[in-house]
Amino acid sequence: MSGGRGSGSRNKRRRVSDEERAAAAQDYRESVGRLQHTAYRNLRQTIAYATIFVAVVATWMLFIDQATPTSISWYAVSILGGTFGLATYFIREPRPRVYVLAAAVVLAMVGVTGMFLTA
Image (cartoon, rainbow, N blue to C red; front, side, top):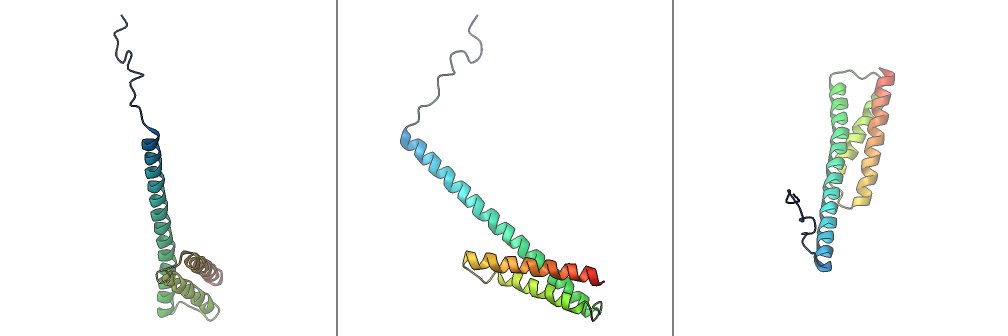
């Protein structure tokens, strides 16, 4: 009664040579590298969009006269952060682009915090 399903089929795996194993590992590493690269690019774009959105909202608030003399500097800081966020699309080298994006985030967050504190 040992004729059940899968009986004796456990050792029928395909033998893989060392070259095939190395090629498969290299393909896997390349795929992971591409995935990490696109994930970083998507994250960078999303963060830049957020800073640009904050700048657009701050500009709109200036145009509808919501800014007071005490809060106008915070609106300007937010707009400057959005400008830095927009500048990340024109910088090609990765290291300076990260620095400009970090500056954009800091300026946008400082501007938003100042807007809420002075409102």
